[in-house]
Length: 414
Image 1 (cartoon, rainbow, N blue to C red):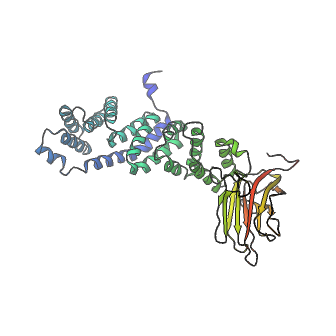
Image 2: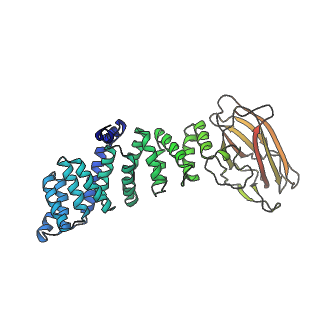
Image 3: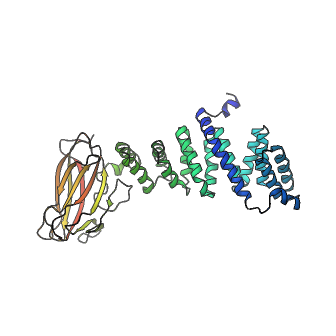
């Protein structure tokens, strides 16, 4: 294969570069204006006062380049470099002028050197992002984009669009994006949230999560949580469950997650989410009867209608058994609390385990029910503790622990 063929970018990379060219060009112009804005006098006027100043020569070269006069820009840039050989701005202007003069390889060398000299030269790094994309070199393009986003957070939305477009246009872009994310830059979390805001981007974000999982910087519970929640909110229940299994196979194999109420860390919505309101208090707290143990403590006035606690689960169709241990610190009237399994979509109640009544405080007891998950319209469920209000207030305190959901005898998970 010839050297030219080896350097030829793949067609998806070409399309991506073409699509990004206008935006990158505008961004580079903006950066040039921003960097020059701090100078009080126009470069040409200031240069009359200090005709040998390498800084002013570089500024005037930049102005000539922006005015569409690359030959004049090249001449001024060379004068600036003669006076100050390590002038990164002048070297970058010289490189871009040489590119417009028809020598792209020499231009690449010059602007690359300018970027190496100064991480603060935004226009150099923007130009290099564009150039590397045209060459199909995603790793280098994203490294320069990373440098810019770390230094200039205001540029992040522009590059989020570019990275998202790259991920959608060519799957080969995912590995170098993952490499940048593995360094945990400050822009990682907002980028993943931005990427997951579209269906195609959500697919790319899920792939990135799987790629990062075995490395040094897997997604945090918070980062996993907004990806999984978006999948669930979009009705992609199987995809959410599949991603959960890929990211945490041991945790996903147990239903429900943290059924021992140890307050284990985990991503929403595959963990307990407490939502108590007026009339109730819900917390995972130390068990005051068993040292070193914790459990779910629920205090409810028996009259209000607050939310209590829930978790997203994906149970296969067929027979299951829900088991939970409970005890009370107070008398418990009949039918004031119930654990339910509710189908997402049509809100059918597949299981309803009503809290047994108790005439006085009780020790730990076990309770269980058998239930059926319908074969149709119940691809995912909410496991939730629900308040069942009565006609008068009666404070009750109930503890729960050791919750398990498993296939009933004679039934197997699919």
